[in-house]
Image 1 (cartoon, each protein chain N blue to C red):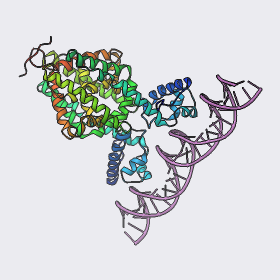
Image 2 (cartoon, rainbow over the protein chains, first blue to last red; image 1 turned 90 degrees about the horizontal axis):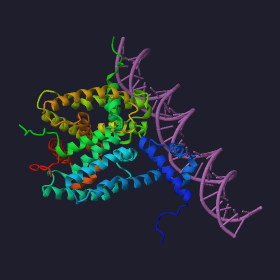
Image 3 (cartoon, rainbow over the protein chains, first blue to last red; image 1 turned 180 degrees about the vertical axis):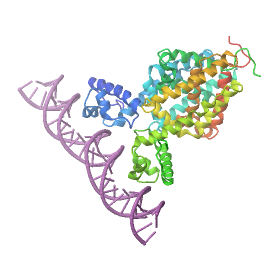
Image 4 (tube, rainbow over the protein chains, first blue to last red; image 1 turned 90 degrees about the vertical axis):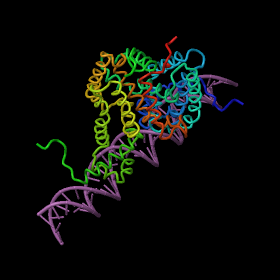
Length: 213
Length: 213
DNA sequence: CAAAATTTTGACCGGTTGGACAAACGTTAG
DNA sequence: CTAACGTTTGTCCAACCGGTCAAAATTTTG
């Protein structure tokens, strides 16, 4: 048995890669329904029928893109390990997620688009693979709490808050840049965000040498 | 002078309201390009030409919806005042934003859709009204920091993180519910989130009576 | 009631979109 | 050269979409 993946020539591999790159650009900017095959074909430098020779349906492109995305997207969480200092481990998870928002904003937006529209194409994955992974890591975090290594809170909502704060810099990028303005909205914004998030997640907002009244 | 708003009969007021309600449902679920006038008309219980009698273009509906949205959406931030205890003030801002995510998830998703696609229709507002408001409130927060009432951080990124964490429960609702599962994903999830966010923003994750090693 | 004004509808139109298809083109192996 | 195979393109189509229009139905007004 050869497995179910169809055999592909070298040129097919390359062209499919080209199409997926173009489709990521278009889908992430316009959503699935807002994107046309023509747009993708043009971005990939080929004609529409030619594109349809490599992917028979528009949905096939989106599906392939989404499958690839999910692996790399969840990699940082998978790396969250029980070895090492818990606070350090969480800090580097936050850093990695923020780096992904900086380096792969299109992937983040593609994912956000899908979830926003009710996740019609990846619902089974959310309830299956994703839930399993999060539950597993929540158990790890709970262990750290029982050991007194980090404060006691809800691990699931902790993970949500890390996702939300980091992906915000990819998904809401135009808003972030508009509000920060020309001077502070440049490349340095990710370092500012990293500093802020580290402080937020470690120390919160209470002033340092000050017990609450 | 009567002002520039056109005079409208009672029935026009009602039908326009009906259409806007239906359009909010459809636009927030499918985005602007992903929604059709037919869908909105059907959701509003009228024919397409009839709908177009009240709003001449699809974009007019979206624009009206967006204008109304922005006022109510920014109301909590406008209320952030210099009077009262800073930590209490921030805590209730977070609570109000989370309540809005719970009570007006469609509005949140409509806004998220617009920003995700590059905010083509509200860019001037982001750079104008929104930036002005945020700058103003950031100055207030900076005052609190100078007075030693809250820890020193970046006020802009603080506001971003509040937006991100609270709106996450509206925009990524399906994911949140899928990950939490049937038992914890019910109505109680917003109270869990409120408790978690309060702790996160006030105390962070460091264990209580424990100086870092 | 009847005229006037407003609201609703069916039919229609031009442009776009996802996708099919056969013919043409290129490449490689015998 | 040529047959076989893989690739590319022009053409076409049916469905959909945003929007128009004139006529019909309804409501308001005198």
